[in-house]
Length: 136
Image (cartoon, one colour):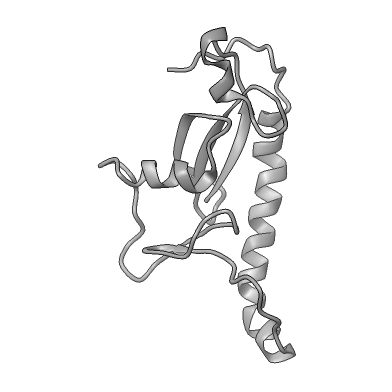
């Protein structure tokens, strides 16, 4: 699971909310994909100024949010917190070689997610900023 900014056309009256920290007009899109790199959930439309964690907090409040089965977790990046069924990297800890070997399968999964990001999400982000995307 990850959040990404997608360029968007926004009416002038709402532009201040959709301006990202880099100054671009965008919407924050939360996406979940399975291990076969298929999208299983997309939550779009949040203003570009919103933090990923804030978007997730809102998404989980909706009845159609696809929580994983009990005992399973979504891998998330450091922009999200470890809670309920979300597994983020632990910050600020140095690992021994044994820990690194133990965690290699998780690292491979994160690398696969990075590969997915570069193949699918990044081209979406390259869309022209003045493309006529409507905010629903």
